[in-house]
Length: 178
Ligand code: SAM
Image (cartoon, rainbow, N blue to C red; front, side, top):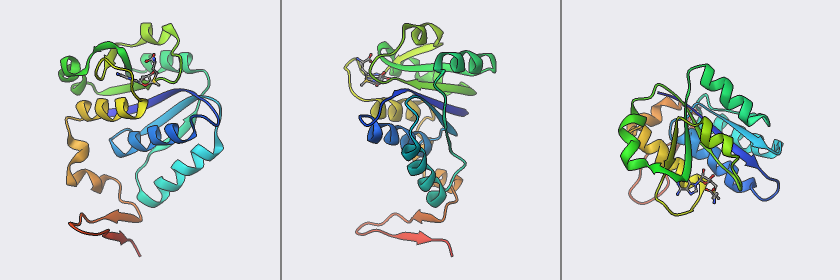
């Protein structure tokens, strides 16, 4: 499954940390890239770039402030649009269909999501019916779409970075490539 994430409405300085976490969750749990709209943020792009440099993977970050146009284009290119929204249908009821998708654009919102996003989405999916966080919603949504494969030991070998961890009962076991 190919997964691209779109993070809507990044605001500076307010969303600096949360948007970085959205990017890191997207990368760690199986997306190949993230597009963000709102305010351009060089520091966000640099932080994520540093993680990718050290920890590996082909993950990329791209800024595009024309989010609606981008959603329309990606739909035309064959992506199914899955929008995380507390108003949507419960993820537990949709996960079977979501896991079968081949090319997916997962959209997570910011403060206010334009109504057009709900209309353009093929699925509006709720992760519980309470408001919480784009980071939590994205993590759980990706987990259901990947059917848990992103947590398997073997999944880590996809990254092939300069640094990797060996699980340890007691302490940090960091392995660095020479
Ligand atoms: N009241 C806002 C709304 O319209 O959903 C909450 C915004 S929340 C801070 C930012 C984003 O987190 C939302 O746009 C959505 O993508 C995601 N989110 C928050 N709670 C969610 C939930 N229960 N299910 C799915 N996504 C959620």
